[in-house]
Length: 374
Image (cartoon, helix red, strand yellow):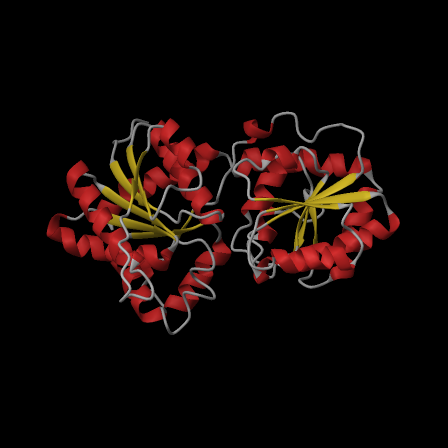
């Protein structure tokens, strides 16, 4: 089916995080299908080089600093830049990722552009719904901004239900569920077969909700009984605590902190299992990447993770905070290579079937077309 081509302004966060990664992948996918895509952010996005190579135009919002302003008004700067780019490039749609502040950015830009302003799509990602979106400091303004959008999308039904419960939006604004996606061809070959110890990988932004300290404690249970090592990818507020805990437990020789990396596939290929003991996940993009690389995932039985990881088929689940449970899952997989291979193969097949890029980009194109009909 031949689809209409649109000019699309995408607004996303520039930092490392799931919403920025998804925004970049969607922008690249749409550009590859012939849409004119412009990405607006406060600075060069995390995957800026890949965006540019795909033909996506990048725009940084100018953020003037003044001693009279304690916090620079990034929302106003983004809205002004968005309005300018839409007008100059004659774009047809606005698509923003992560509602705080970007749903408000879209609303402000549309008010500047007036009656001919493009319709907008807001993709919510998780913490922009709960806990942040439901906070009284943000809720009234954010609810109004979401009401201004033509279509809302979420990566999971779990998050869609949260949006409905928290923001009390009318039936016309119930979110479309468009799962996140990965291209499994990027992980061709799967984990390496080098002689090495059983390896666990954890990747996150080290916020408390990711429970990186639980990951260290669960790994310590494994390391007591089996030769093992762990790779911790990412950075964030709890990374110093995680490093201190590793030192306290005497695991400095077995745990490697590698910081933020644009391509996680290198570390996935060095690993045997992925560990996600999060307290909450609207979807679980790292779990999807690990499954796509042929790794079984040990994760919390919570939120969108229960959709991404099929318990007993592509990974193992434990309750949030159950350090012993996570440790036992790791020990079980360390001692059972055939089970690891079985779960890994099944996970890769499942990702290609349910979370292929073509499926998601088809749905985003449908949403882009549908804004004129709602």
